[in-house]
Image 1: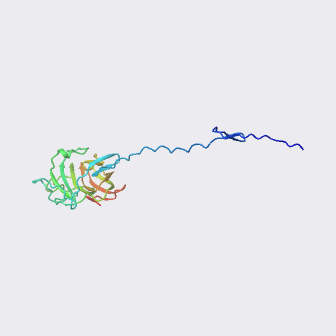
Image 2: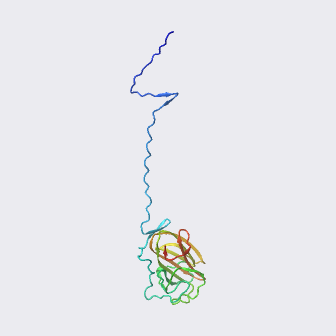
Image 3: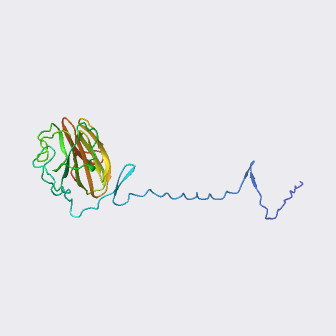
Length: 246
């Protein structure tokens, strides 16, 4: 039997790289490890409201008043020698309430349809109230000691410090016949202006802790009167508003 010899070619290792074929597809060296994605640019959060400010959605309301040590200050008294209501009526009395409102009373022209510019007018007298809670009624008896016969065509600017114990969103609601407007730190929050029958309008505001100023302007032309201010935390104003929000 003849033996067959198969020559074997030995190839010396060289520096030349070779591809190894498996079947018909070449196998390539493993790809380099994936590079990490570039770091995202840092996002700077919107700055928080500066300390001592309060905001409504979309706009700042400005600086709050410096908190008053020891609780709520009394409303600013009328100037010396002013006419103060001597009795009581639906809106208030002549006795100051340290936790309530001071009202500046004005005589206004018949046919008024928009809020008068009380800031440029001289009050005809002053009165006080512990709260703004006059349901829709027919008024009689006028303003004793100021104008006892006037039950129509008058206006009142109510002012008080507003003490806020807890920073939060609040809702204020004004019910009036005729027009009314509510301001906090001179910024309009609720606008229920105009000559109309009893009507309700609400407005939200974010208040920081401290003592703010609150103002409600009101006018009455003819017919029944009404003025009620409600407030509460969150979206619902459920109770007659005091001047101390806890």
